Image 1: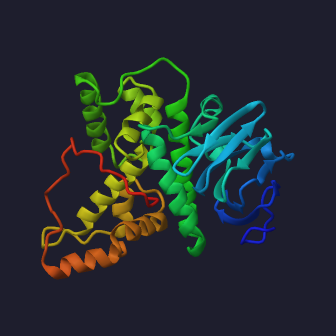
Image 2: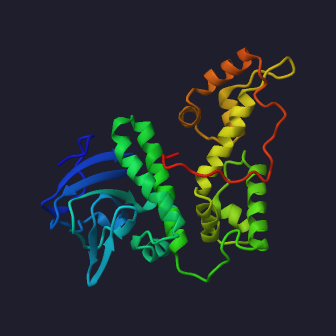
Image 3: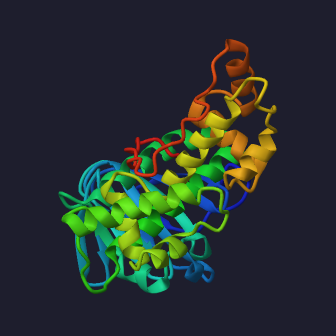
Length: 320
């Protein structure tokens, strides 16, 4: 079996299962199908020590077996495993499984956080998994039909969400639930204000934001997971909103903005990535938006800055 770019995917032996592979930049997506009673068995290879596996089932219940540990898993749940360790998936029903093989270096979480997050996730009231599972399913269903730049964007979303999952599950002293009390709501308000004030900074990292507000990166990820999104996705959306507003300006007092200059001003490093992201968000290129707004006689929201306390938008199930 080979991936759609001709490269051989990682070896995973199976009994009664069929697998297809798709490359998503540095991530390999493997889709397995099999009948009830079949076993998906992972036997580590020499290079598996630098990879992790993030899986979710589109159909069917199964048991994840790692050594003496057995955990049931079903659609709507996800599991995380280190590929340097052997494990098996025992199907109770006819199943379809999507397995993302992810390089360790691509994940924004520490090794300790990843190790603490191994296993099955998706208990009632779990906001991270409620966000993650639909994204993994939607990406698996749509990524193969899109060009390489889109696939890399999908890989970035998946690795970002894996970092959020690991941070949320990491061992450590308990912290107050985001927004659970007056102090929590005030912290969230200050984080939003800080991010809005520094959208143009290219080094606007989770570590910097957490240090500025005297909270852990883990807590910061939990804040945004509780709102149904991730920090990276929200920052990207806010930057796109500001670029859209600026590109929509018109009038004698407003110079014609350069798309590349606007992208740089709001923190986008790569102009091509900005253009793809803008089109995915608004259905047209930045240049088309600028021409449409200036030709229509509308001011595109000139002078209306987004309030610093703007709420975190709810995420959809589609990858951002």
